[in-house]
Image (cartoon, rainbow, N blue to C red; front, side, top):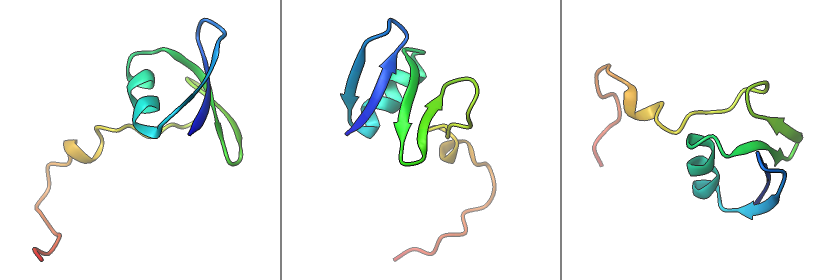
Length: 63
């Protein structure tokens, strides 16, 4: 579970997928990483849709 501060000032603990959803909807002010607080809009934050937007050739091997 990840601790997060919402834009309304409240604090919650949320699963990673829940954090992704809250970030997508602009509800999070900051969240706690192992290295400290990550502030939305200042610190680098990964985007969940990044992998789906890849338009190059498939290089992974079929199992």
